[in-house]
Image (cartoon, rainbow, N blue to C red; front, side, top):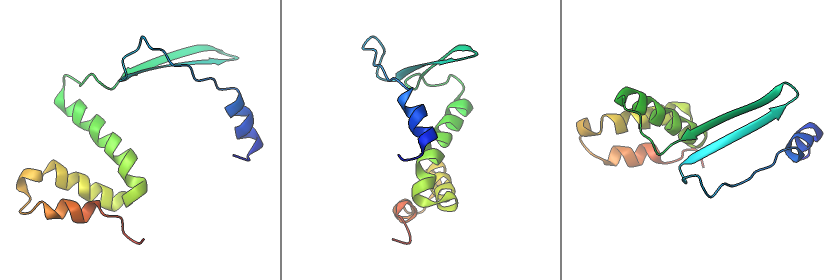
Length: 102
């Protein structure tokens, strides 16, 4: 990392683990000149509403798969997985999950 502004920002960040938190939980505290802000999340707690849970999973999949497969192929793979029971052959999933172009 050679960008001076990013190095200064990085040097102001402190990461502290909390053994009291479950491995699926995270808590973030940000202190700025304007005050202190806290947020937490627990990825181990599924949403009660299945459509919300599906949206979360799709967002996570897109975030992870798009940089590897490209937006179009990631979207096609996601759709294939979501309609798995309608696929004539699971081989289609393997084809879609392969990187293209080296």
